[in-house]
Amino acid sequence: METLATIAQLRTWRNARLGSVGFVPTMGALHEGHASLVRRSATENVDTVVSIFVNPTQFGPTEDLDKYPRTLQADLDLCRAAGASAVFTPDKLMMYPPGFATWVTVDRLTNKLCGKSRPDHFRGVTTVVTKLFNLVQPARAYFGQKDAQQALVLTRMAQELDMPLQVITCPIVREHDGLAMSSRNRYLSDADRQRAVALTQALQAIQAAFHGGQRDVVSLRQTGLAVLAPRVDRVDYLEILSAHDLAEIGRVESRALCAVAAFVGTTRLIDNVILEG
Ligand code: PAF
Image (tube, rainbow, N blue to C red; front, side):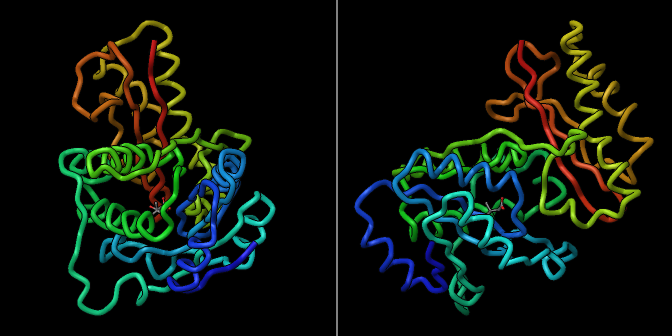
């Protein structure tokens, strides 16, 4: 496995590739969820590139950019073990030279859910991912369903901007008690870690009600909030929207995304399930 620290090194490496390249963009602090994406890419492509870049433009001014976990050596070990051919580790100046002024935005899909409380977040994600796609030129790019809105936004972006690649969304990987794996889980104290599973349990309660025949979105939300609200410090959102375009719905008649974001201590966690008949 090669470590490519500059854009020039990445371009040289890329120009020498003859077969398909799979791509797993990350911000590091890798866990089993990322490993599952790398493994899938390694089975579907000749080469797999992982990028590790804590992208400053997707963090709000009061968010956790400075304290975002940085664990490069462990990340490289995980990438190697999962079958990556190369890891790209650019720095901020390379990705955003002074005077940087070009942005990629996706309308509408980005105004909902996380976009409401993190206004410029998706503009940062779509811009950095476009830059990374241009640099890596992958045939396929792999993202986790845990960031369901991000996966929808990036799928739409790639389609509408005619990017010559396939965006592949892979299943959420969970801890033994159901908590969705996340780089931010390592912020949680032991007590907060126990409370964090309330996000998953709220989604499970909604799923159980749905499978029991409940289709009304107001009732389903109430079921979830009754589990979630007493155990977390703040619910950012718990919403049930069309899984296709995040449109509001009154009843779950076709595929719906049930998504939650909540603060446990000062850590903001997200999770989701798909509801379908
Ligand atoms: O999901 C992430 O880790 C980030 O949002 C991504 C896609 C790597 C862009 O910085």
